[in-house]
Image (tube, rainbow, N blue to C red; front, side, top):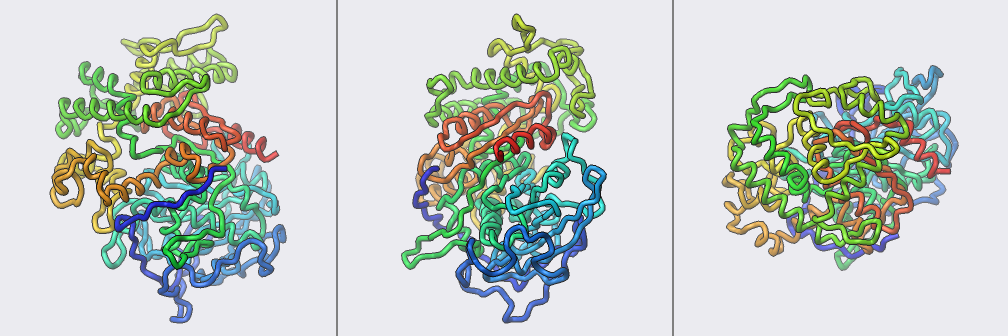
Amino acid sequence: MKRKRVSLILAGILAVSMVAVAGCGAPESEAAGGSAAEPSVSTEEEAAPETEGPVSEAKGPGSEEGPGPGEGPGSGPAQGEAVNVDSTLSFDDAVATELTVSVDGTETKVTMYEDCYVTNPTNVAMIPNVEGVDQKISVYVPENATADSPIIFSVNNAGWIMDAYNARTQVEDGKSYVSTSDDDMIGMALSRGYVIVSHGARSRGDNATTDGKYVSHSPATMTDTKAAIRYLRNNADKLPAGDPEKIVITGTSGGGALSTIISSSGNSEDYFESLYEIGAAGIEKNDDGTYTSTISDAVFATIAYCPINDLREADAAYEWTYRETRQRLVDEGLPSVDESTGETFQDPFNDVYTTEWMMTASAALSDRYSEYVNSLSLTKEDGSALTSDNLAQGIIDLLNKEFAKTAEEIGTEQMLADLAGNADYSGQNTTGVYNSSSEGWKDFLTMDDDGVPYIADEEALQEFFYFVARNQTLKVACAFSNAGVIEGGLASVSGFNEDSLFGTEEYPYSAYEFYSWDNDSVKGNGCGLDDTGLTWDEFMETEEGQAFALQMQMASPIPYLTSTENGESAAHWYVRHGVRDRDTSFALQTVLYYALSNDKSIEDLDFGFAWLQPHAGDYDVQEAYAWLESILS
């Protein structure tokens, strides 16, 4: 495993003003799977102490208190107890609710345990707005679970914003689940006796504490997720079932990205200060200002779908992938596509993002991504360097590997039928508005001597990118960081995008890549050349810029995967990105693949571009959990 290193000091940019709260009550609205616990009314003595971090030493594995592993659901907390902030973070304080579900037609008992996973939660409700604190955890224990059962840790984080406790993955009382479906992860997990865990966390957005400080910027989402993992390990001897050494984190899109970050940065000291501030288990502050960890937040495995990872470079990677396609679409004057109906329409952003601006931004971002890829010092399977000159071939290689696998599974005839508009494959609508029956269609596939389809060269790859873009409108340039690029433009329509994941506690967002920073046009937002007088490259040389760089680093798996000293990687990885997915780029995912394959501490990597899948997840439950069973055995 990789060694840890001493982290940089976060300076003022990551300082978080926490408001100690008396209880960690559930939201007022009823949670699926049973009534949520009423917010606790605590006495002054019960309130979380106002001292920094954990008050008492966290109880690690081996404690003699509480029920032992495998004693069965119901041996822990009594039902109906208030959910309070507990200075020891003991599972004894969790609230238990008995659920009854159907799994493959058989009645199954599941016990849901709810608790606060930090001693100093922030007094802020996340989106969607609900009463109470979101830093809570749910542990779902089916009656067939044992002490050896893996723990499926399901994270949401859709759009890097949907982390509210009410939006977590939930086992619903009275619901029917099946283990034979390709899109029922819960049914599969319950049928095998796996423990399911989900949590609420801080996420990006305009979420300020009562004193007006923005506390949800990076690394808040990652820190909270690590704290939830530490809570499980802190209670290894108290959990009624489930092995905290077999945590499998899984999510889609932003949740896929979060899964990759957690799975690559285990026990990194970069996060220790922020973990200490919220009172996570197993973090102590030393007299010299450094931090010591006594509990691990590394995980066993991940199942990640379409991870929008490495947000620092996501805009640049997107334009590197789609620059030629974007120009082709502009030249053809094609309208946009309604993603829900498939109908074409005139994009309202055409008046905001002019063609000239769009292509100028695309060219600048694409060039910068070439520099970035060359700086990573990654190698391909044959030992040659991965560079911007052969990245396209790397994408082709991965696509062709998946096409050969698909041809073996469903046959070339079915693949060609899918491309002609068959809407029945895998339950996904593959018709789109542009298929092999469309006027102007150019095949991007060639057949080898055995009738297996493949992409022959970079010209065919560009036809593939065009196919993807014709079926779902490309994002604008500066796809992820554009809040201040044009005042009154995209930000006024769709919010702050991922810009609100970054910045200081005084401002709701910050531009976070060179083009959006240098071209920021909103005065008074605390970022950009216009406000600071510094270009992005100049700003990054300052103390504040270095702290900002660390903030961005903690929201990406790549720096941890490419380091031999910082962060412990999960041993097992299953990653999927859909062949029709235009929400992030094939370049970004291909670089992720090579970063994973270059990490020698990773024992097992199953990476694929899933045939004709869109931006989605949990569409191959049978395959994914067969893979998990294989590594568990």
